[in-house]
Image (cartoon, rainbow, N blue to C red; front, side, top):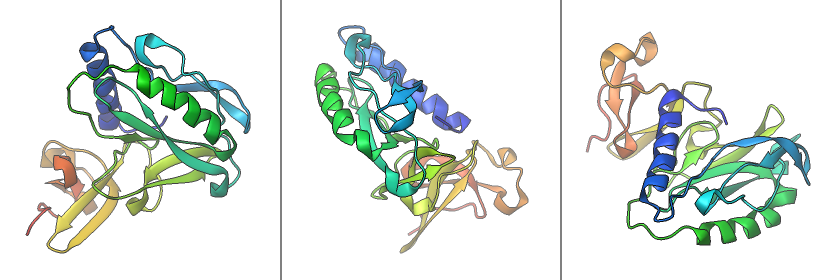
Amino acid sequence: MRKGLTAGLSLMALIALGAACSDSGAKSDATVGDGQGSGGDATSSQLRCNNNAPFGATYSRSCTSASDCVAVSHTINCCGSAITIGINKADKAAFEAAEKTCAASWPGCGCPSGPTMLDDGSSVLGASPVGVTCEGGRCTTYVEACGKPCPAAEQCYGCANGPTTTFACSASCTSKSDCTDAAKAECATGIGGVMFCNDQPTCNAP
């Protein structure tokens, strides 16, 4: 799963939190490895449920067009945090049946869930829906408002100014010095409190 550094760290933090808050010492693995799914040559599930139990279904992520793909969600820890990934639509029913059992295996830990992570390394932003497309022969999820999956080392960010909200792929930042692209030289705080390199320093203004 391709992701920027910040998104990768966020996903690992969610997984670690799930293991820490589970009464049964659970571990979840959000990676997907090579193998065969019923929808074609692509992947075999390496997703995990509570107690590191196997996911219970294999699926394909291969595609030739966006119409081959659907977005599905997988719970990764006892806090209810999730990832939403793209798979071949032929395997949707098998995936959802396995996920129903998997999600029920997690105890309720009483901890807040983290952001839902997507294939391109972005996280779900507010009410913006998740998009899914065929990129490089692989079903890939992204924030629909950004129009397409973000490239490596970038994520989709939202910037609200008055009644207008704009979305764009960009690099994360903690200060202006992190923003080396002259077209996005300001470090702004966007939707969800995340900081990213932007063409203006202010977001979320009334």
